[in-house]
Amino acid sequence: MKKFVLAPALAALVMFFWGFIYYGVSGIPYRALEDSSSLAAVVSALPADGTYITPDPRGSEEAMAEAMKAGPFAMVHFRKIPEAMGPIMIKGYLHEFVCCLLVVVLLVRCQSSLDTFGCRLMFVFVIGLLIALFSHGSAAIWWQQGWAWNLMMMLYDVVAWLLAGLVLAKLVAPKAA
Image 1 (cartoon, one colour):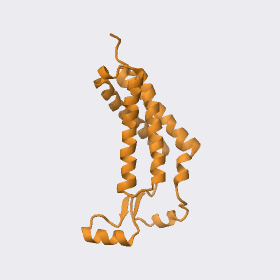
Image 2 (spheres, rainbow, N blue to C red; image 1 turned 180 degrees about the vertical axis):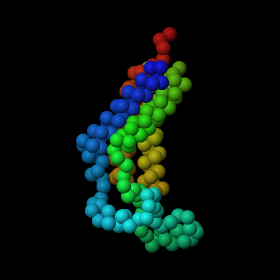
Image 3 (cartoon, rainbow, N blue to C red; image 1 turned 45 degrees about the vertical axis):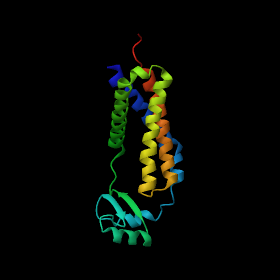
Image 4 (cartoon, one colour; image 1 turned 90 degrees about the horizontal axis):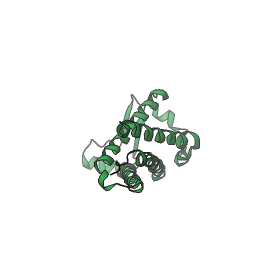
């Protein structure tokens, strides 16, 4: 029970509060953003909520190549009326809980080779580093999103998983022989 409920619940709570500090209190990641004062007028003309990419990648390969040469390239995630913060916070915590629970499953499955706190911490940290590098590196490379923003997201993820790792490494220890 402690391993599969309490450990991921506490680790997710630590991640949740780290997000509050990183995004809400410090505002550090927003320093990577460009001035968007004119953006609201442009995107408010979009017809519906959704993700928009220009040039549209669903055309022919030749048309896409020509459009990419001519520019611009843009990806916009758009909502006319954003969701209220309460439900977003609940979904965010549940997302972190499920991710931590999956890491607990890995820790338990590998516990014979993760017998020390340091080994378990490094295991979780490397998982977090892998997640951050793959997801945000992919966004910067394949979707041409700015590196500055994605490095800020990587920093959040790596620290979040380090903090979660501290909790999980302590609470998901193998039973003493």
